[in-house]
Length: 164
View (cartoon, rainbow, N blue to C red):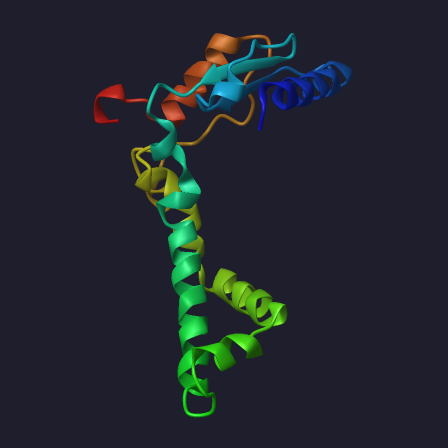
């Protein structure tokens, strides 16, 4: 990602929002290429400093769960083939892209839905687990009131700088 690419994409998104007569709030990390200005119909709100790593929900369990499952499939294949192959080189030569795709598909099926939906809680972006939440999220926030939209986002996402 570069500033030029991000600006270009943001201009496109803003154009789409203008056509649809919509205004959106886009929450972005502090990556240097993202340091650009809001547009007329796309308002930017940046994560606090050093918050991005905590907010990477995929890293908070989804990728680890996927990788662990993928490795299980790989090692299962290794252990099945040990008596047949003549060393690591022969084993590796037998591997195909189809094997990797197949293991990826199976690994994704092994990722539990609860792992995905509870990542905001694990990242400390939500005070409670999704299935334990009792409060309702507002369905619509008036697009003309950015402070109200930001308040909704901040209530849903904990930006406690002291715990970063």
